[in-house]
View 1 (cartoon, rainbow, N blue to C red):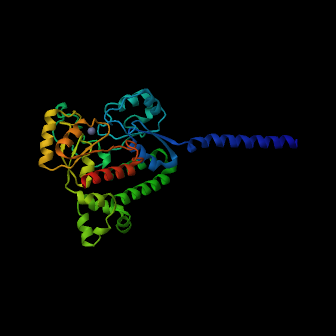
View 2 (view 1 turned 90 degrees about the horizontal axis):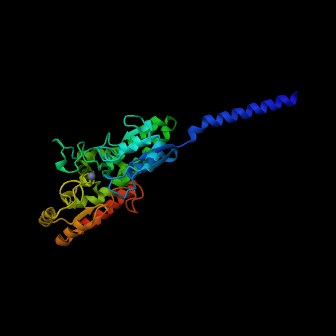
View 3 (view 1 turned 30 degrees about the vertical axis):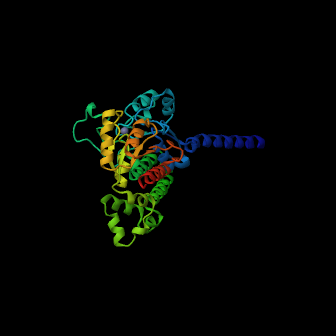
Length: 346
Ligand SMILES: [Zn+2]
């Protein structure tokens, strides 16, 4: 009798343990995130930490406008809890095909499992007139290459945090903590450690946006304390550059450079001989020192203009993993600042 009781008790205990295990399983499983670009992957990884598993559709090398909707991407999307896109029509050629092909209802546009990272970013080049194909590859909601402004990366990190907390409320605190760490690291890269410690990242960004930062620092004799990306780029303010594609607008706008001309006659339209002649004249007249282009484009046009004008060609990726130094979002911007400042400073 006694033995039977004990055996029963053990059986019940085992059952309870087994049931607990089953109910606990989904919570220990990572949230599966699929992003369209490697930059979004890097930011999502920084916020999600060990609670998420992130994959990116694009590799970082290719032209982000033209990614093929491969079946393997649909398989990846099928198991995703969250899909994150750059938006502003950057992915117009492949996003819908992949999401439809995945048959995953949870990540359809408008569902909590679909996040458009552009929702809150600062946009440039929003057309005021109707967009026609004649203008080239112009996006009606604005230029989609917004991730090259570090402020926009900071904003995107906030949007991702909010959405992750909604999908996985039990981890909300961890995501918030990761957001604080990411933003602090980004602010320190932007303004230098000293100023962030003294003034705070939020206040520095607010002044940078209003255009009052230099004045504020000068009035308090803090100009010399400015560090980071801004300190490197400040002496180059007003420098004129040529870009291949209109993918550098946000970077140029944040760091005060001027795009004097583009090698593409219209966004997405390859350079023509007649257009390049105009670009060369302009480059000489406005003493342009740098031609900035992504590795995905042919160097031919840039090299030709460089030979005729003496400008230096800087080949620089615009996405994480596009070149080996760009291992994550912060090192991507490090690399761009490094290459551009070296070439422009000559
Ligand atoms: Zn573009």
